[in-house]
Image (cartoon, rainbow, N blue to C red; front, side, top):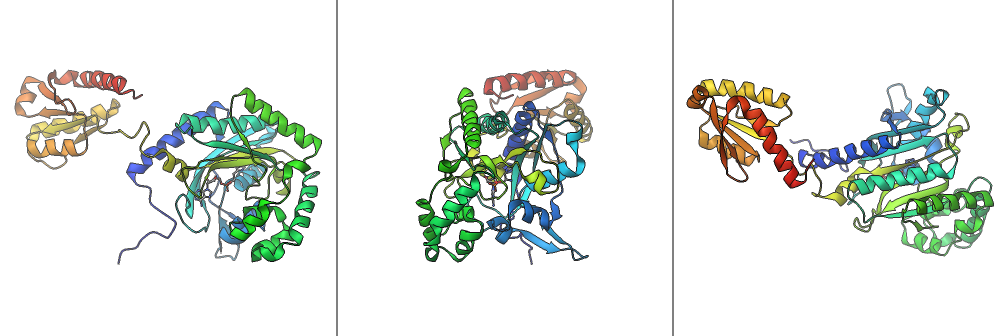
Length: 427
Ligand code: HAM
């Protein structure tokens, strides 16, 4: 019997990994230009790392974590997000002792036991960035602009930046109180989870997908009316900086995000092209988390991009789409096969993608194969060609054929490929 993959977990096949590579390469380039360095943290962590940081009342912690006991009975969890792990690593390795502002990015799989649907998987991937050690609005604007530039660099301009402030430990309690009061006489209209949340963690009612809960919160008070002067000033400075950078944004006072650790600036990059799963990236400031997890009182801000959703938005329209072999060497006869095998390796070491036939087949079958794999050029070599040191180089797109000196083949090919690339506008 065939063994299939688990529901919500999927293979990413070569046709698709090209776009993934392009997105990841672009992210690395953009992030490194902003001074970020890569960090790799484990996929498995102690469960309490996530429950303490993301919050017991969140959907992620209360319903969606892959948690199990190891052989020693310790509770472990497959990471549902990267922030908690990066904060743990920051506290554990103390990089701030060398340099107080730390900018870290990471790329990798996350795990959430959600109901799979379009744009939502149980194993999905995030490109994640975190900045530690600066409390000011400039670092908020820097982070947000980095996310926006990443989207522009991969050609996604039709996304909207949503912005909100969730206040701080001074002003948020007043908002929570107002929200609790508002929900008090409406609890019977809330789902079972939200009835509990209405008193324990009322902000989480905003995340609920149940229609009756959505209707109740639609008329709830909004946070913007409760911000203290310091949070108001901070938020205005973030908006001014974004305006200076000519980055358009939409103020969205309902944007509370699904994780408990946020304060002040929160943001999401949204699209209308993916149905219900409209967030392609999300993040915000989390000034209290490092201390909450036992570290120093250092502020932080970050965001994560959902790679599957970005891939779905890009489709086939990306520069690596047309990657195919530069050359196929069709060799006829034992001596030519041996020479072709050696040339292929030499040419590859010169930066060309070269294919040869492993089975000794005739010219017709080799030409068919070259065509099927989309080779740009075919070099045809037999006994005569070896003797004269000249061979036919066929351009498979234009069908033009040139007679080339074998020892010049690398240079001729390189020139041809350079011209083609320039003509097609490829790098
Ligand atoms: P998040 O909003 O939970 O934030 O996730 C960020 C992004 O990951 C979402 O906008 C979405 O694109 C993608 N995503 C989330 N769940 C799924 C899923 N089941 N399937 C596919 N894509 C998904 C965080 O995770 C925070 N740690 C972001 C952050 C970093 N905040 C500060 N630093």
